[in-house]
Amino acid sequence: MTTKLKIDLTQGVLEVEGSETFVRNIYNDFKTHFVPDAEPLPDTQLPPRTRRAKTKKPTIPEPSTDIIPETTKPAPPKTKTKSRAKTIRSKNGYTLLTDLDLTANSDHLGLMEFTDFKFPITNEERNLVFVYYLKETLGLTKVTADHIFTCYKEVHIRAPVNIENSLEITAEHRNWISISKTGALTLTRHGKKYVEERLPVKK
Image 1 (cartoon, rainbow, N blue to C red):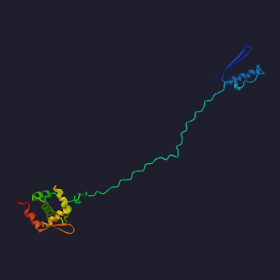
Image 2 (image 1 turned 30 degrees about the vertical axis):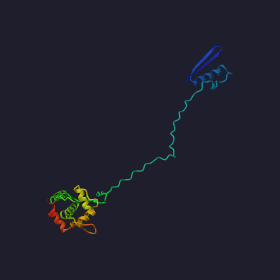
Image 3 (image 1 turned 45 degrees about the horizontal axis):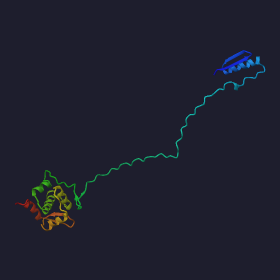
């Protein structure tokens, strides 16, 4: 910063220009030799120095400890479930036996072809044909009302509303089948002969 000093002693002008320290030294030296009663130049008569204000660094507020961050719980691992055979029940409580294979193979006809060949026209005759096929063709040891219900579904014929009652009529009125106390069905000799010799009914 440049400081300028001008002194007029009856027009004996003395002008000094320079730094503050330089001007003060010249003034003090001048007053010592030429103006003995003069007072030294006070510091307040010189332009005050200014300092640049220090800029404060922005303060980052600390996170509040009152706020608890929300944490998400990991999803529980998926458990594998064993596959089970599909069970289909009718409105009357009969079970469709999905593991009962009634299709044809190299040894015998399928139930559909066998039923078409014997051509039963009543529910009693169909009950007999189904029991015959299950016992004589497939060799099943136990035949129940669920087997008969499954056979009706296989040949796409509406099953009787009450299969047990229909089987009892077939057993008592026709004597083609017999029913045990547990509900197991067997083929009588008369019923077997009827399927093999009388079906289809000859016109």
